[in-house]
Amino acid sequence: MRRTRSRNDPRALTVTERGELAFDVGPDPRTIGVVLRLAGPAPSEDRLAAILAARLPAAPRWASRVRRTPGERPRWDPVAVDVAAHVRTVRSGSATDDDVLAATVHVMREPWALGESPPWRVTRVVTGTGRDAVVLTLHHVLTDGTGVLATASALLGLAPPDPGTAPPAQPDPRVRPGRGAGPRVRPGRGAGPRVRPGRGAGRAPATHRVLGGARTLALGLAELAAGIGPRAPRTVLSAPIGTGFGLAVVDLDLDRVRAAAHRHGATVNDVLLVAGTGALAGLLARRGDPVTRLVCSVPASRARPGDPDRRARTGVLRVAVPTAPGLAAAERLRRTRARTCRRRRFVSGESAPLLAWGFATLGRWGAYGPVLARQRLINTVVSNLRGPAEPIALAGVPVEAVVPVASAAGNVPVYFTALSYAGRLRVTLRADERWAGELPALADDVRAVVAELVDDAPRPRLGS
Image (cartoon, rainbow, N blue to C red; front, side):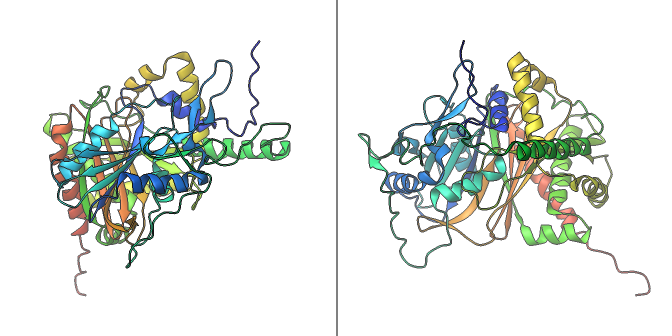
């Protein structure tokens, strides 16, 4: 009889990471990413490989593959990482957003070999104009969407621009050159200290485990209960996603969006909910399928600030946003704010383990794919990530823009992912291949809704 590995194995995948593996039922390869648009040429492959090799020791999972053995829990298995094999270059037709995003789509559609090497890549997008991009892509099992920029900062050394010449990265003494073209991180050395599971290894006192589990269960159930509401309406969008997708980016002034939100007693996230659902409602109306509400999933992370090795642990909150034709954007924002305000107090991210357990259970039964393809819980996902308030640079090259890209699943064809950076709020629209042609109209509608809210200045009172 095969012995099941201890629950306290420090290298075992967490329940949320196992949930991400169960989520990986295709056709999307569960890739998330971040695009760094640079003000100059991208650093060379050798320079990027040296930076990564110097920083991998601080994040052991990034030098590990996912090992799945029958009868045992999946675990992180340290491996020798040929860093140069994870860094490559692709060419873009031009420096326009459309061409860089098209190159990003190509990179993100590549499958992962989770059992062979760590599931991450760094890609230089060379435009031929001297204004390149660098794309970090990774499998969702490594971190959640809210942690992708923190991970990029930790691994690529993103920092405020240096007015002088940026010093070369100092490689870690534990990193030795491999036989390939770049440095090699060796397990147990470059991948961090070896941990040998034994009695009490990684084990918290039983009382603490029980109390922690009870707290997670209570907060997680409260978070899930806060999202209870009407089923998502079935629309022409409600069909399983395909193998391809398109991207578009809406660039907004963060201060103006924030001021408009505060003027209505709302948040930037509320504005994004109204703008995203407003754009989708416009698309449905043009297709002869008007709706009075759309239900959004809003990710809620419990990540700790400053953690360079952030693990996948994101809960969700369901919000039904009114989209009735003729309803002004300000009124939709007011009603949305009232709903999110009531639910926000329950947001903790602690629903993540409960959801992951459900995902893993469905996965074991082979039912997860069919359930996702027919779900009626949400119509879309709206995520808002907070990036650096001040400009940053990659190896001394200023970063002009940061563009997040989400993964997709089930029958949700359109995603909205926003990230604030240096006074700008960039919203990435991801649309399934069947709807990619609608991206320009969807982007215009997002801008129109935000403009309506920004220009909706309070009217002076009579007699004042």
